Amino acid sequence: MTVAPLYLHQIDEQTVEQARVRGTRCHPGDRKAWAMQQGDAAIDLIAAIFAVDGRDIRKPTRCGLTVGRVRHVAMYVCHVTLQLTLTEVGMVFGRDRTTATHACHRIEDLRDDPHFDALMDAVERTVAYTLRRDRGENFA
View 1 (cartoon, rainbow, N blue to C red):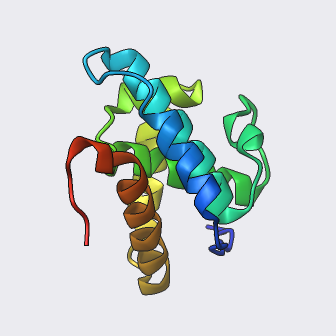
View 2: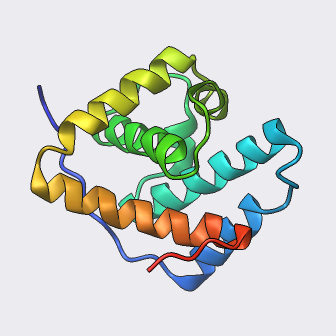
């Protein structure tokens, strides 16, 4: 299996604030709209973290290895960190829930590598801090 190397890039406060605002415009009571906004904000944030274009992640077609891997990371983070259902993750990315399931399994398998696991921990903490803070959750 070919694994695209991923590298974290520094993001600025403006990017974080834009994602936070984008992810909190809707009340969680409207689950579908809330899931879409949380997912879109996560895509923008993860695209900035890996220095790829968010439009490429959202494309309905396959992309290069790096964009594909970042898309898988984003799907995984939406499911695990933001607690979106796999159906909601598929909806956010314009794909089927089975595609989201596949992405989550791929990332989970890659987490056996300690370097990739550390990278994923950093991404998850960033997204959790940015998008879940408004729900009163605290992250160290």
